[in-house]
Structures are given as C-alpha cells and as structure tokens.
Image 1 (spheres, rainbow, N blue to C red):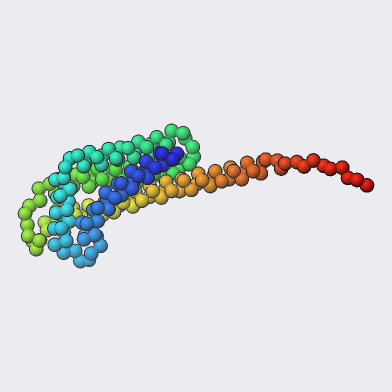
Image 2: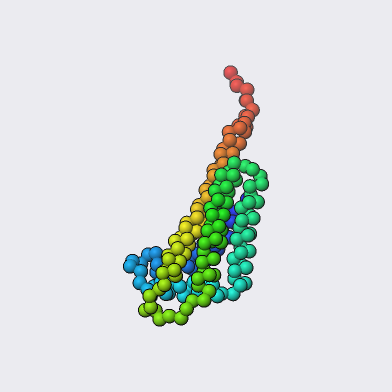
Length: 188
C-alpha cells in the first residue's frame, strides 16, 4: 500500500500544482468583481502562452496522468472493501478531472487561444473569448476541488487502515493468555 499511495498522492499533488498555476488567470476573472477588460486580456494572454508552449510539457503531464490513473486502478485488484470505497471514489474524482480537462479545457485553449489577435490592454474583449475565459476558470476550480477530494479520500483510507491495524493489535493482545505463575505451596 505504501508505494501505491505515495504514487497517487504525488501524482495528484503534481496535477493540483499544475492547476494552481492557472490562478494567475483565474483569480483575475473569478474572484475580482467587477471584471475589467485588462484582467480578461491578462487571462487570455496567459492561456495563449499555454497553448503555444512546448509539446514536451503536454506529453509529460499526460504521462503523469496515465501513471496516476493506472496506480489507482491497480489498487482495485485485491477487492477489499476499503479499496473499493476509497479508491472507487478516488477513481471517480480523478476520471471526472481528466474528462473535464480533456473535453473542456484543452479544446478551448487550443482552439481559441492558439492565435490570440494583437490588442491593446484597453480594447474590449470579444464575447467568445470572454465567456471562454470564465468557463476555463470555473472548470479549473472544479478540477482542483475534485483532485483535493482524491487527496482527502486517500488520507481517509490511510486513517481507516491504520485504525483497523490498531484494532487488530488490541484484539491480539486480548487473545494472548496471561503468563501463568507457579503456585507456591503454603505452609501451615
């Protein structure tokens, strides 16, 4: 369990860190009210940098995702109830994140932000870019919460297994007979 859990936690933490870098753009759109065009252009420029980034980074992230999914699925092989409950929930959240990112975030970034038109920061942001920026920020937040849930479920699994081990040790101590003492003859 130790290596598998370490891999799942490291992969999930890496992916959370990757999502947290989007805070540069997302904080300007989700958490600042009212949102102005300068903030939207900053977010659009950030997503444009991601869309035009090196392909090797995309392959690295894909390999890390594959490693995480394989490790979580691998733990279901033994069929224990704890694995089915905690890892089943982790798989659901992990796959939800992968699905949302693959079918919402990546297509949006690579279709709308690959060739960002030149613009001054004071220009109005086109409506299609504006709605895409808000959608990306919302999806990044949902993916972050889902991956945090994976970490929470893995921590819960560790706690449940350590509590089971403690109970087993207590039961073993109760089942062991106390050492007998030799009776000494009593003198009258």
